[in-house]
Image (cartoon, rainbow, N blue to C red):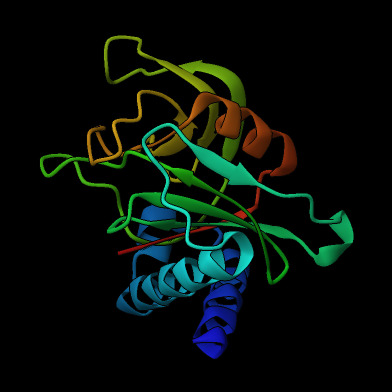
Length: 184
């Protein structure tokens, strides 16, 4: 699985470099990208056990450990089936948080994305000016990682809602261009 994760990261970089004019969602939601992102989520679940032991996160909870910046660049992996987001530096798991992804009517897209835009406070243009603190947009349709209500199950309109303190910490360590892999 580690090899498929490396392939996912290589695919993410290749797509980012070779298809700049294409819409973000179309570029990253290929069957290969979806499979690679799902593999990355499976690896992340195993890495969580290795890094933090047999912990179970309740809605709104997260775990974070100090990992030096020199460990490598950041990437975010989201597992929709377990409703968890994972932050890596290089191959080292830094943090994991309970999330709430999109519901059945407005599902969260899967595949390989990158952070396209960041704002410390954004208000949704689609959903009644809803606040989106620590917003990190990943596609042209407004899907984002942001702080928000986190019941521990799919409950959003496609965004990935994060615990507030985790969202703030994640926002502080990622950049525009940070890879975001969303798998099942």
